[in-house]
Length: 167
Image 1 (tube, rainbow, N blue to C red):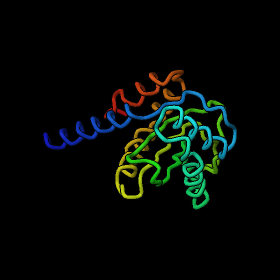
Image 2: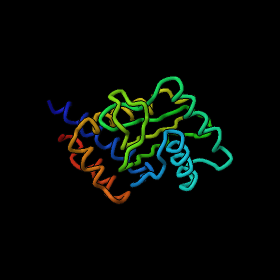
Image 3: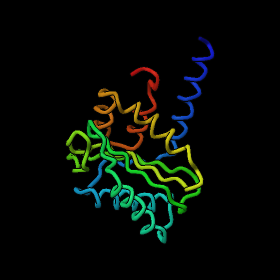
Image 4: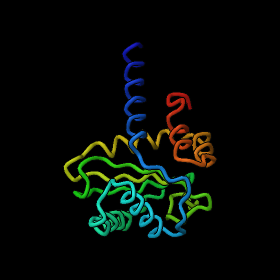
């Protein structure tokens, strides 16, 4: 029993660390899928997570991934992600659109919460682990609702890091 608790605490600590390294956008302006992906990419440039010279390559990677299968999930959550050697390690970004954006989601709902990840081709696991953990977190309606109420990057981080094990 104690070992299980240690594993949960370690997972919580790892997710908190990953989330603290994410970029947060409390309000996305774009109103379509391509626009959202471009806006999120541009924010990664602004926050010096990717180089301006890599903008088109990153955006193209995200669009190619979307062409294979939409990353619009359900309950308003979309998880655009791509592998690209424009990054050296996992980069995460979480953004909110109060109005919602059509993202070809599984349930047909507009996407309001975006979790974007970029990872290098050689990294086969970190994005899968992060997406699994954040998807589990966002499976809670309470967490999604609180995240949509957050008005600042700090508030978004607080929602996602508080009570990680109690949903």
